[in-house]
Amino acid sequence: MKFLLSVILIALLSAGAEVLMPWWAIAIVAFLVSLFIEQKAGKSFLAGFLGIVIFWLVAALVHDGANDHILSTKMAVLFHLPNYGMFICVTALIGGLVGGLSAWAGAFIRPH
Image 1 (tube, helix red, strand yellow):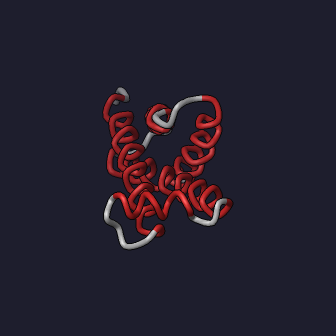
Image 2 (image 1 turned 90 degrees about the vertical axis):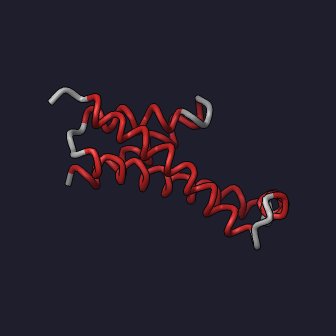
Protein backbone atom coordinates (compact mmCIF):
# COMPACT_ATOMS: atom_id res chain seq x y z
CA MET A 1 0.00 0.00 0.00
CA LYS A 2 2.89 2.37 0.80
CA PHE A 3 4.40 1.65 -2.60
CA LEU A 4 1.25 2.56 -4.52
CA LEU A 5 0.77 5.65 -2.36
CA SER A 6 4.34 6.71 -3.09
CA VAL A 7 3.93 6.27 -6.85
CA ILE A 8 0.69 8.26 -6.92
CA LEU A 9 2.04 11.01 -4.67
CA ILE A 10 5.21 11.38 -6.70
CA ALA A 11 3.28 11.59 -9.96
CA LEU A 12 0.70 14.10 -8.67
CA LEU A 13 3.08 16.28 -6.68
CA SER A 14 5.51 16.35 -9.61
CA ALA A 15 2.72 17.56 -11.87
CA GLY A 16 1.99 20.35 -9.43
CA ALA A 17 5.65 21.23 -8.97
CA GLU A 18 6.24 21.41 -12.73
CA VAL A 19 3.70 24.23 -12.97
CA LEU A 20 5.66 26.50 -10.65
CA MET A 21 9.22 25.21 -10.78
CA PRO A 22 11.79 23.96 -13.34
CA TRP A 23 11.86 20.39 -14.61
CA TRP A 24 14.30 19.22 -11.93
CA ALA A 25 11.67 19.79 -9.24
CA ILE A 26 10.70 16.17 -9.87
CA ALA A 27 13.90 15.17 -8.07
CA ILE A 28 12.95 17.20 -5.01
CA VAL A 29 9.44 15.73 -4.97
CA ALA A 30 10.67 12.13 -5.29
CA PHE A 31 13.30 12.72 -2.60
CA LEU A 32 10.81 14.20 -0.13
CA VAL A 33 8.13 11.57 -0.70
CA SER A 34 10.70 8.82 -0.22
CA LEU A 35 12.02 10.56 2.88
CA PHE A 36 8.61 10.69 4.56
CA ILE A 37 7.12 7.36 3.42
CA GLU A 38 9.29 4.62 4.86
CA GLN A 39 10.17 1.84 2.42
CA LYS A 40 13.23 -0.16 1.52
CA ALA A 41 15.63 1.55 -0.86
CA GLY A 42 14.75 -0.68 -3.83
CA LYS A 43 11.04 -0.02 -3.49
CA SER A 44 11.70 3.69 -3.10
CA PHE A 45 13.73 3.69 -6.31
CA LEU A 46 10.99 1.86 -8.16
CA ALA A 47 8.29 4.18 -6.78
CA GLY A 48 10.26 7.26 -7.86
CA PHE A 49 10.99 5.74 -11.25
CA LEU A 50 7.41 4.71 -11.97
CA GLY A 51 5.89 7.91 -10.60
CA ILE A 52 7.97 10.11 -12.88
CA VAL A 53 7.68 7.81 -15.90
CA ILE A 54 3.90 7.84 -15.60
CA PHE A 55 3.80 11.61 -15.14
CA TRP A 56 6.19 12.40 -18.00
CA LEU A 57 4.54 9.93 -20.38
CA VAL A 58 1.10 11.40 -19.76
CA ALA A 59 2.37 14.99 -19.97
CA ALA A 60 4.37 14.31 -23.14
CA LEU A 61 1.51 12.53 -24.87
CA VAL A 62 -0.96 15.28 -23.99
CA HIS A 63 1.31 18.10 -25.16
CA ASP A 64 2.62 16.18 -28.15
CA GLY A 65 -0.81 15.20 -29.40
CA ALA A 66 -1.89 18.84 -29.27
CA ASN A 67 0.64 19.81 -31.95
CA ASP A 68 0.40 16.67 -34.12
CA HIS A 69 3.83 15.35 -33.00
CA ILE A 70 5.73 18.07 -34.86
CA LEU A 71 8.38 18.87 -32.24
CA SER A 72 8.91 15.29 -31.07
CA THR A 73 9.31 14.10 -34.66
CA LYS A 74 12.00 16.73 -35.27
CA MET A 75 13.74 15.83 -32.02
CA ALA A 76 13.62 12.13 -32.92
CA VAL A 77 15.36 12.91 -36.21
CA LEU A 78 17.95 15.00 -34.37
CA PHE A 79 18.76 12.12 -32.00
CA HIS A 80 18.62 9.49 -34.78
CA LEU A 81 15.61 7.71 -33.31
CA PRO A 82 13.19 5.87 -35.61
CA ASN A 83 10.03 7.80 -34.63
CA TYR A 84 8.49 10.26 -32.19
CA GLY A 85 7.19 7.48 -29.94
CA MET A 86 10.70 6.28 -29.27
CA PHE A 87 11.75 9.84 -28.41
CA ILE A 88 8.92 10.12 -25.89
CA CYS A 89 9.89 6.77 -24.33
CA VAL A 90 13.55 7.75 -24.03
CA THR A 91 12.53 11.06 -22.46
CA ALA A 92 10.29 9.29 -19.94
CA LEU A 93 13.06 6.81 -19.08
CA ILE A 94 15.55 9.61 -18.41
CA GLY A 95 13.02 11.36 -16.19
CA GLY A 96 12.32 8.05 -14.46
CA LEU A 97 16.01 7.62 -13.68
CA VAL A 98 16.15 11.11 -12.17
CA GLY A 99 13.09 10.36 -10.03
CA GLY A 100 14.28 6.90 -9.07
CA LEU A 101 17.74 8.00 -8.01
CA SER A 102 16.30 10.90 -6.02
CA ALA A 103 13.85 8.61 -4.24
CA TRP A 104 16.65 6.14 -3.59
CA ALA A 105 18.73 8.89 -1.99
CA GLY A 106 15.75 9.87 0.14
CA ALA A 107 15.40 6.30 1.38
CA PHE A 108 19.07 6.10 2.33
CA ILE A 109 19.18 9.44 4.13
CA ARG A 110 16.20 8.64 6.35
CA PRO A 111 17.28 7.75 9.89
CA HIS A 112 16.59 4.13 10.76
